[in-house]
Length: 473
Image 1: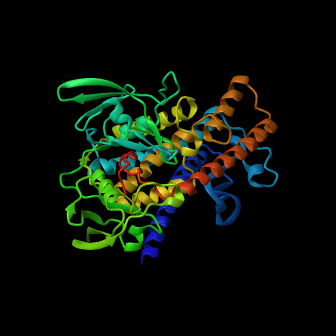
Image 2: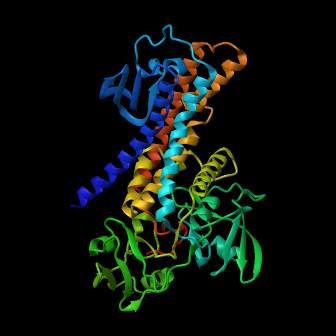
Image 3: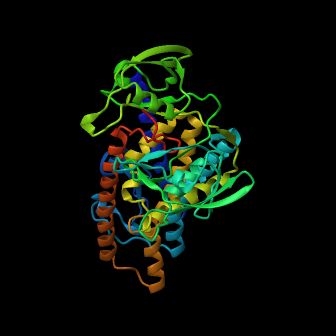
C-alpha cells in the first residue's frame, strides 16, 4: 500500500512537470499557427521519438529524454539539425520581426497565464503559512556544513526569543519563508570574508539593527542563524524522517509520530531531548508517542554513531514542530510579484561572487519532481502553489538571452533586425549546438546534486521550517 502511495505521488510530480512543459510549448505552437508559421514538430522531451501522432502537418511526439520540450519552428530558429531532422533548411516563406518576437515570448506568457489562474484559486481558498517572523527559539549552538558544532550566530548577535524580524539586508520580509529565502540568497560579506547579514528587528517598542555572521549549514551550505519561529502552545515534536539502522527506526518509530514524553517526563523543547539523551545514553528510554490518536510507549536506547565521527548519543530521526500558521488570501498580483522577486534574488545570488548560492543549489527535472512529490504529500494547496512558482520560474528562465532558450531566439531576431540582414545560419547552429551541450551538462550536474539531496539522510540540524535548529536527537 505504501509503495502504491509513493508511486502515485511520484507520478503526480512527473505529470505536473509535464503539464508545465506542455503549457509552455503550447504557447509557442498557438502563436506560431496564428501568425502563419510552419510548426513541423511538437515534442515533450528531447531526442529520439518514442511515440506520437501527426495532425495537420505537425508531428506531435513524446521523446526519449524528459528534460523539457520544444516546438520545431524552422522560420524562427531551426532546431531540426539538433534534433536529428532531415534537410531542415529549405526555401521557407519569410516572417517578420514581430512574428519572431511574439512566437518566442508566448511560451513564457502562457506559463504566466497558467500561474495566474492557479493564484486565483489560492486567493479564494487561502494558504497556510508561517506568517509571523517572530523568533520562538534561539539555539545555543549550530552544526555547520563541516559537521563542527559552533556558537549560534543568532545568540552571538544578541537575537532573542520574541524578537520580530523586520528586514534582512534592507529587504523587508513578510513571512518566515521569505526570511529564509532572503537570508539564503544574501550577498553580504565582512572584511575578513565571512558571510554577513544585517537584521532589523522589533523588540518590544524598540527597533534594533544587528549585524550577524551566518554559518553555512547542511550539505547545501546555506546561510543560517540558528533560530526557529514560534510554535503553537503545547506543540509536540513531529517525526519527519528516520535514519535507517539507527535506534528509532529499529524500535518502530514512524514518520508523523508525535513525541510526547521521555520516561514519563513531557518533552518541552529540543534542548530537553538532547540533554536527556546525553544524561541517559547508557540505557533504554521509554519514549511516549501519539500515533493515530493513541499513546504508545517505545523503549529506545540512544546510540553514538562513532563510525560517522559523532560524539553525542542520538535516536536517529529529524523532527519539526507545529508552528503558528495563518491562512492568508493574497491576491494574484501579490503572489506573482513574490515569485518574481524570489527568482530575481536567486539569479542575482548566482551571479554574485559574494553569495553562497551556486549551481549545485539549483534543481533540475529530478529535483523539481521531488519537490512536487513533497508538496503533494503536504496537500493540494501547497502542491498547486509550488506549481505556480515553477511556471513563473520557467517563464523567467526561458526569457534569458541564452541561445536555445526563447530569449536566445529573441536575441537573434533583434540582432538581425539591427544589422538589417539575417544572421549566418552556421553561426546560429554552432551557438545553439554549443549551448545545448552546456544545458545538458548543467542538467547532469544539478541532477547529481538532486539525487544526492533526495537520498541524503538529513542531519539533525535540518528541520524543514528553518533548516537551522541543532537540537534534534
